[in-house]
Length: 411
Image (tube, rainbow, N blue to C red; front, side, top):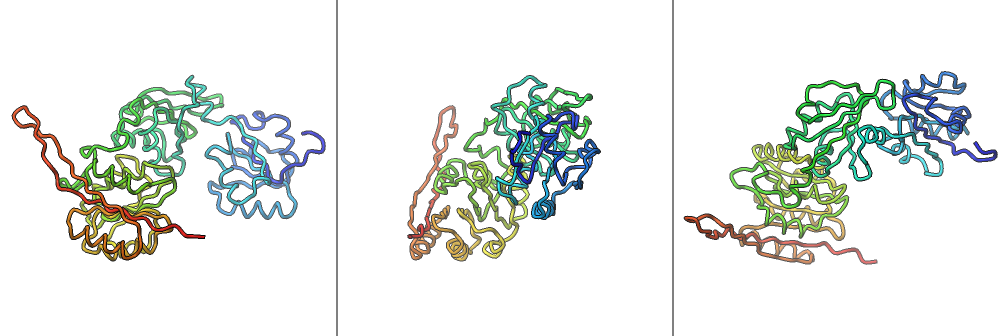
């Protein structure tokens, strides 16, 4: 360490499998100067000669921030040890929620992802990353479905075999996969095969999967109706769905209520449109909920929460929306609209799909009376059918799409 250089009160240091041997002298010096050394039991075992206080993590981080706050308040220097790069699905994200950036200094080690791609000799600057560590597998399925090259961090519960089964059950192709175990250690191994040949195999707990799905993104925007489970044609058709989603104008971080979600065709598409979108799919029919849940699994839509019950009563417990889509109201249209208008923020949008003139009139009258700006389009689709070797167009019933926007606040 350079003479006179001021240390940040909290040092976050990434460590390799070789423990202290994997660290440079400057970083080892920071550890020796610490008053409190924090880390998992395995990592701390490599620093038996440390003279100060130790705090072993027991598999969770609850209360860690308050303990570090207390130590810093007493003037103690804290070092947090973790494996690999603390900024990559690591502890740094947790600590940034409780401490100012200027209180923290990060010393990354080579991440397991870097090592994995190096071992399989594949560039990783265009890869996507997902973590199955302590999480459900929806985000993994969604990422593999949409990206050609994906690296996945696993854990003992969501191990490679379980992940492979989930991907295949979700209808993904039997893609090439690598499993890289115990990276950086003397017993590291790289296994190569397909998802189907991976199921049933066992690996050490510490591993990274690299999945190469050359058919990623084939479905794109506008999921074919046949790819979705639905109840006897009760589905928002793909063409109508495209216009509906265009009117919703869903952006990053938006919360969408899909009221009368049915089998979830609008929810599934909306959930894929922007980063951080959260969808509440409200449906009362047990049969359609079953289909909705099948579609959520099929498309890896972990950002959709199924809300069982009838609107408007079940809307009370939901987060306030940025966007509301009403595809079915069960005879409670005005009450649902009243809830939506009241809880939408400025600039929020409501879209209603109506198949009858009465629903069109009722929706427009209600929203107009409350001062929302309105836009109405009629969408009528004609589909080509074979008629003795020729194509005959057959018209479907028109759908009225009413969209409204809540005025922005004026300063």
